[in-house]
Length: 137
Image (tube, rainbow, N blue to C red; front, top):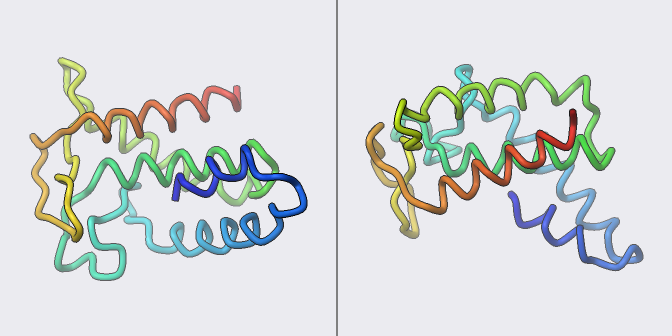
């Protein structure tokens, strides 16, 4: 999900319409799939098979929602609750030593995740989300 905002930052204006529409549609669907606790599952369409949280996807979606609000593509009043829930959940899975947990291992399909799992790309995604959220202040 974070790829579209990154593309929109550099795409010439005459080509943005398609990707902005796609972005809005995808974010709308992703918000529907958000867990009530604020995260997204490793498998978006089969959360029962992967009932535990997943931090890297949650962070990338959080970044995208914050970007969309900041750029006026998403209505802040409508999307801020989902953004707030996801950010609060992400902050809850950073332990007292600063380690981000619940990061799915690299792979082509959803994997089982436990709270102790981490990876640098998950941390990078959280930093991207936090940077975009800071722009809101």
